[in-house]
Length: 182
Ligand SMILES: CC(C)(COP(=O)(O)OP(=O)(O)OC[C@H]1O[C@@H](n2cnc3c(N)ncnc32)[C@H](O)[C@@H]1OP(=O)(O)O)[C@@H](O)C(=O)NCCC(=O)NCCS
Image 1 (cartoon, rainbow, N blue to C red):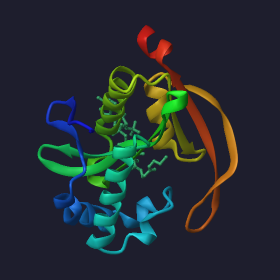
Image 2 (tube, rainbow, N blue to C red):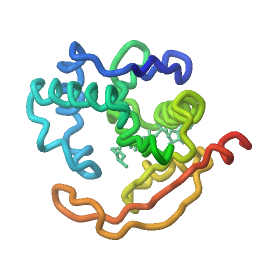
Image 3 (cartoon, rainbow, N blue to C red):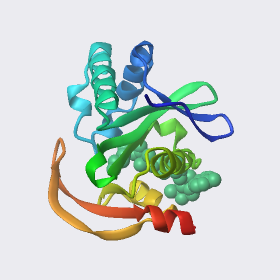
Image 4 (cartoon, protein in one colour):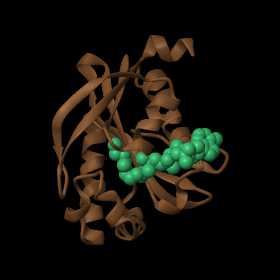
């Protein structure tokens, strides 16, 4: 089962619980317009029941070992979500995804959260490769793997349909051997 990950002073990644559904939905709803610029799912999340469904789906993924999603809690409040969008155990490979409420941006919180996910992924889950994909024009998202020493591996063309356009993804990868050397 996923555990609580310490990411810094007052900053924790906690497995999402069903009782978090109202707070999670409120956060998505308040940030809907900016999230839909870069993520495909906000338009399908229209009620706390949709957030419950998401949390239940994530639990199933954790049980199957194919994904892990955490609420990012800062000073006791939910400020975003981060986790492994998929885990490929056979190839010891996984992809990290994340989003943050606008009020929590610009403080390094997500960089610290992703650093905690890297420790969890490489040490506990024994992964060999972790990747992050970001829209090529998503400057804030791309800055996170760059800050954490990922290598830019290339571009996937027209790989994601968003609400109003189709975007290319920049792919960043970090190997366990590179992470240990840092
Ligand atoms: C992508 C996203 C999570 C990035 O948020 P962010 O706040 O820029 O990232 P961090 O929390 O790591 O903070 C980094 C910022 O804090 C600043 N900062 C302050 N203290 C810092 C510290 N100790 N360490 C690192 N950065 C710090 C950095 O300079 C940077 O600000 P800048 O871009 O103005 O230079 C956020 O913009 C978001 O949720 N966007 C919408 C959804 C999305 O795009 N998700 C990703 C899809 S691939």
